Image (cartoon, one colour):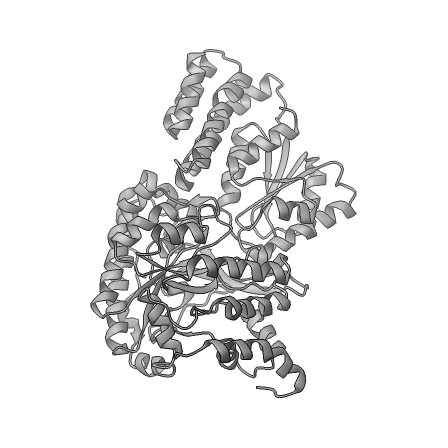
Length: 211
Length: 386
């Protein structure tokens, strides 16, 4: 158990090399990959989220934590697959059409990947049709939409419309985020939820999936 | 100005309030507020995307943007700086165009096929993003030079408005005096954040090139203006919606010295300096004040910790505020009465003793209904009187 605590602590300290080395060590010691994920990395992410919310860490630190988690998952994934642990969920993510900003989306993408999700990242300036295609193709549980530039958030409404037209709306939960987004905007366009930062987005989706 | 009765009626409320409230020239009013004294009414600055400028001009029957500003009672006029005379910006077959720093930029269209269609220019590729070593960064051959500009018309340009209006030297949005922003353009946002943790020497190297360019550039602009610039504006976003993008420690380590250098240069010429940053930057304000900053611009009300009433109480005697009107929710999504309530709240909270210039926290965006734009300016005049 101490090793899992060390993984958690290394992530909280955004020490990428230590996260990688300790994850490998845990695998070598035959600790269940599911435990490494849930009791190490995801637990660390919860603290990262709290630190970010309290304005004790900021975007560079969040980014480093996301990168560390992604690296850990590279080591962990083969073991998860081998022990038949299914992905926590299947998530499609992208920045909506007309918006080319991706720092926030990338951190969210990293943190979902690092929490054991199967992530399909469609990149930036993604059309509503492309989102719907990917949701259908990947049989996604979650669609995550990002934007930074205020007027482009209206494109989120279009994505939801196309998802409805393709009869996918009851199959996928939609979470939105980005600087100009809040709960009232999520309600206005009929998204299932909003998250103010990447760690709380992961938490919200985990709750939705009952994980 | 169109004289049809319908337009006259639309303009009547603002005209009536202005006739009642105004006793000073625009420049006097603005500079009085900047000196933390009370003028006749709170000075007004106006930031709008071009599409909203057009819509508002059409609504009030104004034939030009200048005519619109004159009618609305906007006290400030922007000067965009010297003329670029360097090598022509390289155009690439993929439609991207290089900027001053050799950063490829592209035009992005949003809201395609809707009433809200618009466009903006954004970085397509950051030339330093893939470089690994400090030496490679140093070998970059497209650092901007202050000699690429012709400063001879700066004074005449300012004098189009000076001394009737308060002239703000805003520069161009993409080349505005800054540190972090050009670093993001050159190195990529994600990579420069990683560098701040992992490669501080690379951050310092890029930053120093940028600072030395702006030092020379700004000296040249201020000399050329010969006293016709009333306020100098720099802009560098370090705030996000729910907190600063970087820690105060990191800002002190990488950016405080350059920030103060820019302020000191403007002050050498007797010019107050306004700093634009979006987002929550509350914990930085004591450092801004210590560096001698005169005016903090934006006060994005939907960002955490940026409530104007609290900021005025805590910092209002040491720094002037400009902004405070929400473009993210109230203006695009609210009703005219919400807009008026927002303006009243800011004016009631911040006008006392001067030191407040009312404006939107950023450009009024394309998805804003015209009724809300009208309500905003009527409210400025209804509640701005001293």
